[in-house]
Amino acid sequence: MNEMKNEHRVTFVCRSGREAERRLGTRLERLQQEGLAVQVIAGDDEGLRRLAAKGVATTRIPVTGASNPAGWGATHVIIQGALLESRPLLVHAWGHRLGVSAVEAARRAGVPATVVTMEYHWLEEDPLVLPVGPRLRRGMPLLGKAERGLNKVVSPSFCRGMQGMYRRLAQEVSRYVVSTEFDRRLLLDLEVVDAEKLVLAEGGEGVVRAGPTEPDEAERVRDALGCPNHWRRFVGVVGPISRRHGSETLLWMIRKMRKAFPSLGWIVVPREDSQRAEVRALKRWEKRGWVKVVEEETAVVDPFRALEILVWVGSPSTPVDPILEAARVSVPTVGYETPAARAVVDPAPGQALVLEGDRGRLMAQLTGMLRDSDRRGRAGRSALEESRARFGREEIDERFLQLYDEVLREELTQ
Image (cartoon, rainbow, N blue to C red; front, side, top):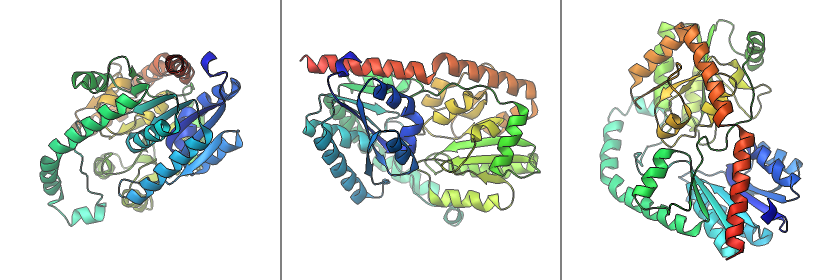
């Protein structure tokens, strides 16, 4: 961090304080130990307040969705004002809207170095998913057909527009970080990002090392979460609960698996970008003893330690953090094969990734792992070993700190 010694601030722009704390907590501490001031610009929540209590300068932005253009306008103005006031040496931002806003604001504020992380690219996935809840879907049998028709019309021009946006963004930044080899190759093939700017960071920000959960500890965690007494098998889903991120498959699987495994319990932990109607549907099933919806912010225990299997029903745009967080406590994954999931899951020792949308095969793989304790144990041990070998937070933090130093040397000597 030699190039940073003479300056005082590094700024991170994230969707929420919880996300910044979960992904970047150790990196922020490392930077503070180097004598640098750290700023986080993120959605206002308890995570942001905990970071402030640790001496991190924080700036709140509206927690907004795609349907809130006014909120995004306010967010851009707030980011611009915060960077003009703090004049950081380096800005690292995540995501599409925040990435574009932060990079533009950094340019206007004269920030020497900018890094953007894009965990996915809107070049393969359908752009349009109507935010229709489960109850309305039952009364709209033609919804899927309508969506497919609309996507067929808008997808070509949408993809061209996004390619142009990524290309402009890449021209503005010092480094452009992607999380999968697929995205790296795709962007190079499309000549969107110059090879010298492109950085591959499989596993994103990594995870803090942990270890397997003993049976007694798992029981204590389940009791603390309030899981029903009749549950004997425990699977979980962690991440955004929305149609975009597989909630229809999740609801279908819960209903189907209930018939085959009446004592199977589902622990669901909604994260950023969850759709309220989908979460409400799960809470209705919670009253029937099928599901336990855990609010991560108020949980006093680690819900991953209650699980035997993580179920992954995400799309290419779904963050894979939960797969890594499950692996760190020896919990294997069964789920859909997206580029990001393929980058962090080794299926050889018993974990299973199936073609996205193949619900029948997904359920068959989950059923097989539930019935085969040897396979489950073998897959969990392999996931833990892979997590320790490739996705340790300490090593990934070190690589990013070296990247920041490298970028600053380039930008400050021009």
